[in-house]
Length: 125
Image (cartoon, rainbow, N blue to C red; front, side, top):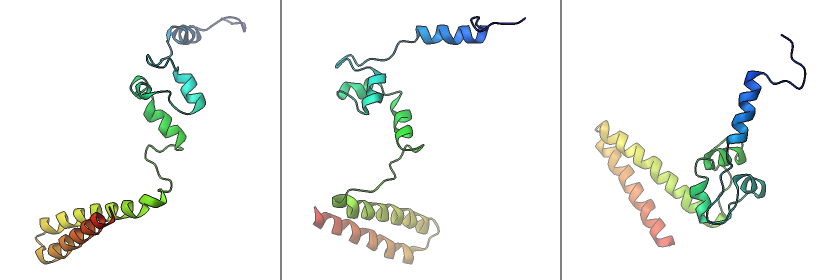
């Protein structure tokens, strides 16, 4: 059976019908459509985040070149705080590992380092 260019295959017909039936999400608060939000690159109001919540991970992933976690530079004001927080988190993991291994003398040193880092962070605030 040969089809000319104007005829649809069953698969094409189903895809076309499904596309016709799909309703584009629109924010009930500000009236912004998902397509518009994607075009302008931002949402119109706080309700947009709830309305388009199913699409947000895909949008972020696309904007971040396939990543859902921000991997860019940190603002200068908070870069030191972020580094300290990451260091504390790493040390807390190490501390837990040392406790599990019952290496208590090393654990005390790591605990004190965590305490000092936390105190230095409080003095910055």
